[in-house]
Image 1 (cartoon, rainbow, N blue to C red):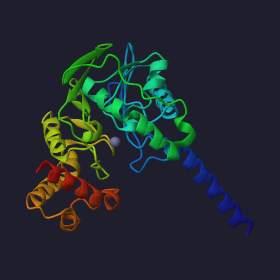
Image 2: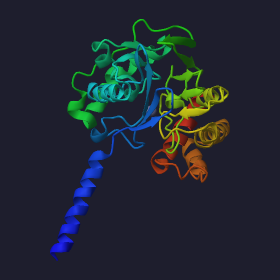
Image 3: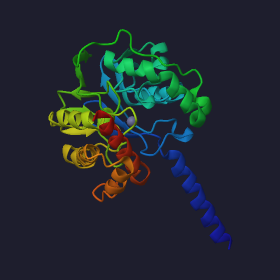
Image 4: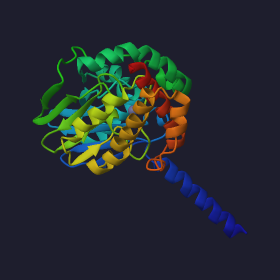
Length: 310
Ligand SMILES: [Zn+2]
C-alpha cells in the first residue's frame, strides 16, 4: 500500500514538474539566429497571457528584432525575457504584422524600454481605430495583466506597401498584400533565408477565423500573393512552422472553399441560414482544431460579406 502511495506521489510530482516545465511559447529555432515562438492554438486565456499566436525573434549584431509585441504589457515582458534568453540582447525593433490585440498591444512597453516600433501606416490606422475597444474587451479574461496597457502605434509609421529594412546587416522586408484578416495586415519576409513570418494571413493546425473586420475575398488573394514568394519555411500566425503545401491545404484551400461557396450562394440570394446549412460540412478541414467552434461562424460572416457586396 505504502509503495503504491509513493508511486502515486511520484507520478503526481512528475506531472507538476512537466506542467511547470511546459513553456507558454515553444521556441522553434530556424537557423541564423532566427526563432519562431509558437503560442497555443486555443483561445486567449489568463494562463496564456493572451499569447495564443506566434511571434518571431531575429538576432542581429545591433540588437534583437521582435515580430509582434503581445496582447498586454505583462505579455510584452514575457516576450522581452524570451528574446533576451535567445539572443542575449534587448529588443531594438518591434515590427507589427497586424492589428489584432496580440500583435501590438505590447508596443507601449517596448517603446518605454527604448525599442523602436515599426509598422506600415495602413496598419497603424487600423490599430488606432481598434485599440481602446480591444483593451476593454481583454480586461474580462486577462484582468490585472492588462494594467498599464496602452494603445501605442509606431510613429512615424512607414508609408508604402513594400518596405525593405536592415538592422545589423539583417534584411527584413515588410510586405502588404491586401486588407485580409484585418485591414493593413502585413507579412515579414526574410529574403536571405527565404523565410516568411506570415502574420494572420496563414493559420495551420487550427482553423482560421474570419472576423467581422475580415475580408475573405481579399484574404484569398493576399494568400496567393504571399505564397508566390515560395518561402522555404513559413511561420504562420497560428500553428506550428510549416511549408507551402501545408499552408495551401489548411489556409489556401479553406479560404477557397468558403469564398467560392458563400459568394455563389450570396449571388443566388440563398440567405445566410441556407448558406450555413449547405456549407457546414467540410470534411477536408474538420480535423483542424477549433473547427466546431469557428467554421459555421466563418461561413456566416463570409456570406454576409458577399451579400453586402451585391
Ligand atoms: Zn491572430
